[in-house]
Image 1 (tube, helix red, strand yellow):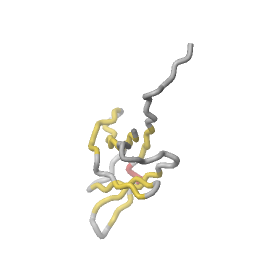
Image 2 (spheres, rainbow, N blue to C red):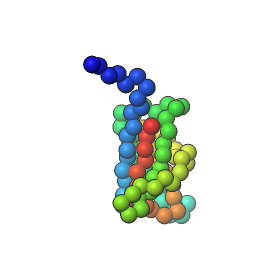
Image 3 (cartoon, helix red, strand yellow):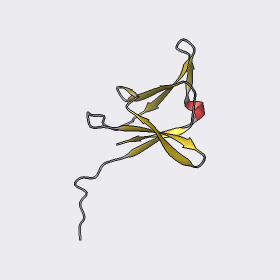
Image 4 (cartoon, one colour):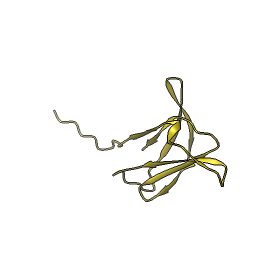
Length: 87
């Protein structure tokens, strides 16, 4: 028996820590830059930001990212640990 995933999505999690954020003194916030690697980014690609609270990841937001080439960037008023789900 052969099972095909015709409508399967390739999800990828990009995990980060508080230490990955870089302070931006000019804008007085923090910047996070994540490498997308070989992931293709198109119009249908979604980025879901989750924050780590204890042992669980809690949904924080969607649509606040900036993509430049193969780099995904976020800005925040404070650094936090979490992950980004790329769908």
